Structure formats: structure tokens, C-alpha cells
Amino acid sequence: MDETLIKKLINLAKDAQKNAHCPYSSFPVGAALLCENGNIYTGCNVENASYGLTICAERTAVFKAVSKGEKKFKAIAIVLFSDNFGVPCGACRQVLREFGTDMDVIMAKQTGEYKIMKLSELLPESFGPENLK
Image (cartoon, rainbow, N blue to C red; front, side, top):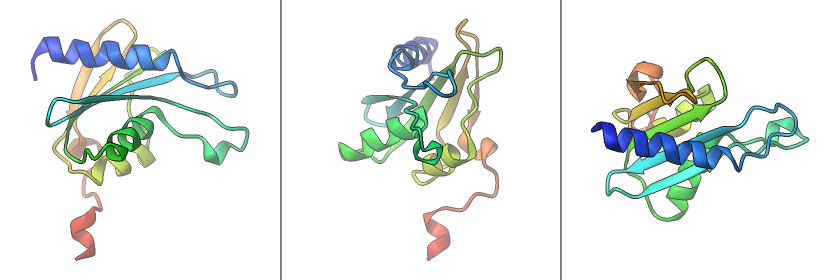
């Protein structure tokens, strides 16, 4: 993936992060999901007083994309306010896995520094739709 596209995804994730509803954790997260056809869907985390009903930025982006008929994803960028890279939680890894293991996961800091890993590296020996056959 070229540097220009990576930076675009990171910047879109930063923009989405501004819309996060996180009054309990004060931990805004943004994501930008790139589909194979070039469409991009963004998401932010939305917390709820009933904590279990909170949704992460990554899943927001995936659900928006799927609701528009998208199911083939190439990459996702994740940004958070932290000295650490924006690594997706286990639930988000599993939701992303539903649509394949080859997508790039771009984990970025606010500084723009990033690292990229394949979803298959973040969720080895994963369970997917093919396991139900």
C-alpha cells in the first residue's frame, strides 16, 4: 500500500476520532476502513452507560460498510490518543476476521507514526466462516 493512501486513512481516522462519544473512558478512537473497491468508511467509539453496549471505532466502520453492501476489505487504520499504537481489541479482531485474514491493520499514533500488520498476525489460528462448513 502506498504512503499517500496510508496517510489518508490515518487522517480520516483522526477526523472520525473527533466524533467519539466517550464520557466514561475519555479515550476517543477513530478508524478508517478501506474497501477493495476504494470506498472508505470511518467510525468512532460510542460508549454507553451500560458499558457492555459500547461499540468500538473499528466495528462502527465495519458495520457502516456492511450496511452499504460492502464485504471486501483491504485495510483499516486505527488512531487513538496514546503513546501506544492503536491495536484493535479482541472483539474487533474477530469482527474484521469475518471478512478475511489478509487485510492490513494500520495502527497509528497521533504523531502519524504507524506500524502495519496483517490481521492474520494479530489473530492467528482464527475462527471464521469456513470453520462452520
